[in-house]
Length: 210
Image (cartoon, rainbow, N blue to C red; front, side, top):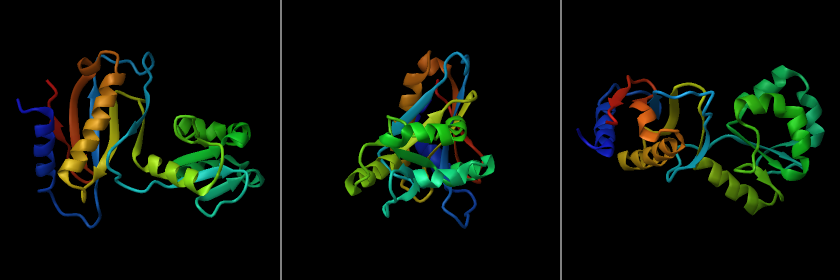
C-alpha cells in the first residue's frame, strides 16, 4: 500500500482531472472515525497550518470603534437582543475576537449563540488586551492560518485548502491537521476508519490508513 502522503498526492491528481468549475473549489479532508465516542471524548482543537487558504471574516468586540476590523462596541450590544439578529451575526463571521476588559459583557450578551457555534473568543486565539494596529493585524494573520475543529460526530470534515493552491501546500496543510487529530484521539490511528479527500463539487477519493 502506498504511503499516506503518496496517496494524498494521487488523490489530488485524480480530483484535478474532474470537471472544471467556475469558482475556486475548496479542498476538504474527511476523517471517518471508528470505536470512538463523541460524548466520552469531546475534541476541540485549534490547529496552525503552514499555508493560508482564504482570508477569514473576523469581527471584534472592542471598547471603541476600530478602522482595522469590523467592530461591535459595548454601545452596539443593545442592537443584538433579538435571537435572529444574534444568529445573523454569527453566520456572517468566521471568527470573533474580544478585548479582555469587556469579555464578561460579551459572554452575557452573545454567549448563548457564540458558545454553541464554537465561535466564542477564547484565550487560545481571540482575547486581546489592547486594540492597537500591531495586535489586531498579528491576530488576524494567526487566525487566517488556523483551523478550528470541534468533533460533533464520527466524521470530521475540515477545509484544508483551495484548488488553486499547489498539491504540496495542500498536502502540508493536511499533514498538520491530520497529525493533530490523531494525537487528540484516545486510541490514535486505531480510531481512524479511513480518510477521504474531495473538492467542493467532486466525489470523495478514499485514502487507506492501514
